[in-house]
Image (cartoon, rainbow, N blue to C red; front, side, top):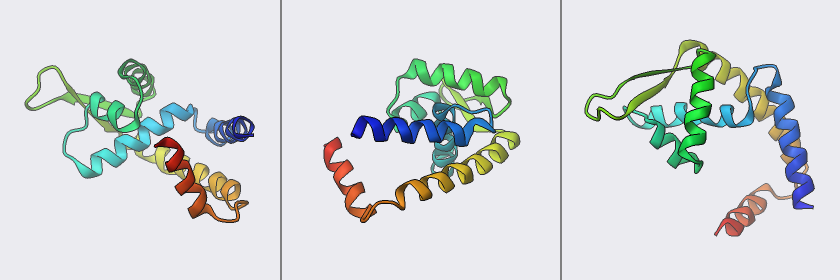
Length: 129
């Protein structure tokens, strides 16, 4: 059942994001760039990969796609010559704002079916260890 629910949720998230020309992974990366950028000055590819818990190569590939779409920008890091600072472009901020609303609307309708969302979230965290 977990497999079926997960697949259904992912399929509907993809539908929610299709109008923004974003994959779910691209959306998650954009959202985390925004989140990390509000908490720290310089956000690097490594910061993004570590925060999300995905492979650095996958992060790199996703960022390349987001760069081509002009949703993110890269600048030189002030102190680390090997790193680039990743930030949202104004277009990226606008797309993210709209995409977040679409995802939140779906998530609310999806998870409102639960009798006790707080317990559900706690149990998922327990499964993650």
